[in-house]
Length: 211
Image (cartoon, rainbow, N blue to C red; front, side):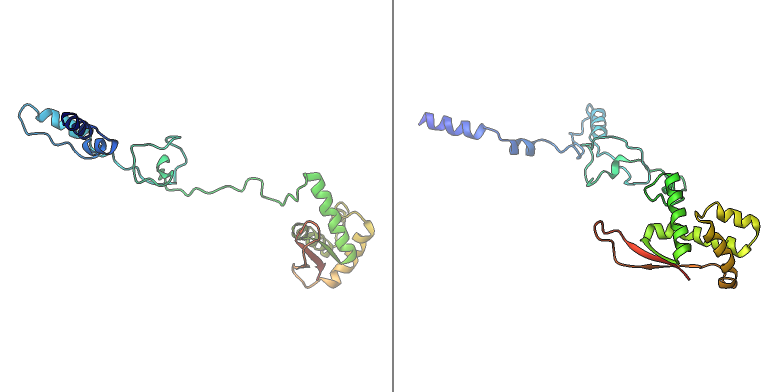
């Protein structure tokens, strides 16, 4: 009988993790101590040390990280917004257009210029060609520039066109025909018509033609 009482008392005195957590005070609740004249100073220090930490302003306007690891002292944070500072200097943050002045066409500058010259020559020769939409949009301004030079008709403009178009006969025919064909039209000499994608790589294609 004595052995049974000892075993029961040992089971009751055994602690568990849940009971230990419930017995510990919460770190965000101010501790209360008996109001004695000797413990007032200690109570004020303890309440300041156990005060709930202030929340950090959530903002993505600044891009300087405060910490590479999430802090364990802050709760209610469901994302990494608290790792960035709030920079409010009155300006908008926007990306700059570095290197986007002209379409690259996946070629270096010399090859790109040669490609555009060849496409312009073929369009002025045949009147309508089929190419990709990116190339058609890129060559459009060069074709219209050649027609504008032909409308002027001076020797200087003819030499500029001869320096760009590969075939001389096309330049002479262009300068002879353009004043009658586009004399009263101010721009808009070409037309781009979209068509089915190319077989193989599914590249978007288009027809570009002279109006």
